[in-house]
Length: 93
Image 1 (cartoon, one colour):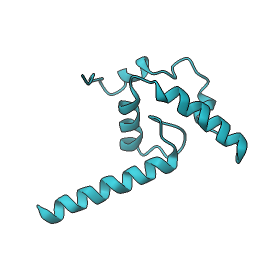
Image 2 (image 1 turned 90 degrees about the vertical axis):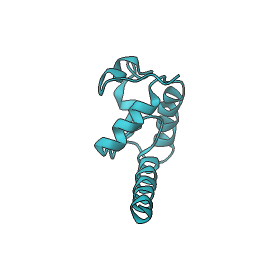
Image 3 (image 1 turned 45 degrees about the horizontal axis):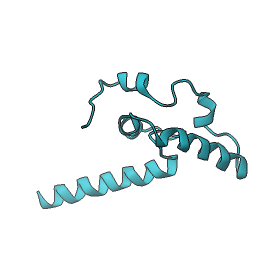
Image 4 (image 1 turned 45 degrees about the vertical axis):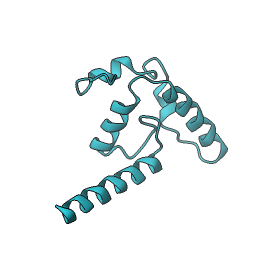
């Protein structure tokens, strides 16, 4: 069963609610960033509101940070896939 959350109410149920926000916005590069990203992704992995978080990040164009268990690069790929799907639907419609 999918739980519907109003636009911002999902944040109150997030696994990261009590976490240091800096964990989700790595400033380091190389191994330091990899460790920090891995830690954030582990927190996201068990989050009950991972999908609303990801939806928010994609819809609002979040370019930085870990959102919904995705990296910025993951979201760029997701946005491209959505645009491609949308274009394909328009072409066949």
